Length: 194
Image (tube, rainbow, N blue to C red; front, side, top):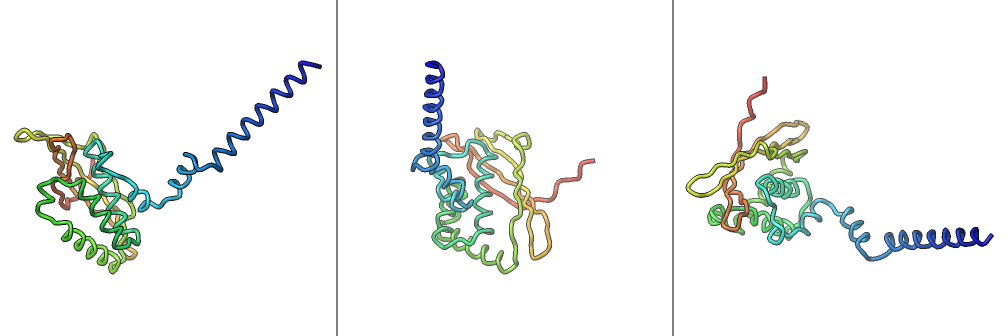
């Protein structure tokens, strides 16, 4: 009988401990609450909480993926002017100094706002973005600097029509070892694989 009481008491204690743990994890202001809030954030809100200057994307592919996250927010979200300005500032952290010298913050903000307005007029949205895999990223060295070349595919909807757009990116590694976007251009669709 003594052993039964000990087992019952131990089971009750374990049950109370487990119950208390679950209560704290769902009702406290701790990490679980933060996690819940982050899960409920829109892509725009999530993106605006990131700091790429402190946690810079490590590969050319990740840089282009983050750049494209900004693009999708521009065109698919209803951004306020302050949000657009913040997104442009974030996007500029991904750009090479040479590209930044030819494009002031104010000019870029105005250009982005005009493009967003045109997307809305044309009823255009970005349905999906695919960035070439790491295996498809071509790295070359030229004049002592490393360059990366990769392509993104954008699935776009304009009105009721859906189509693909291809964009090639050129990135250059800076003195800090960070890959920065140096140039980009529209590209032709790759040849069909036979």
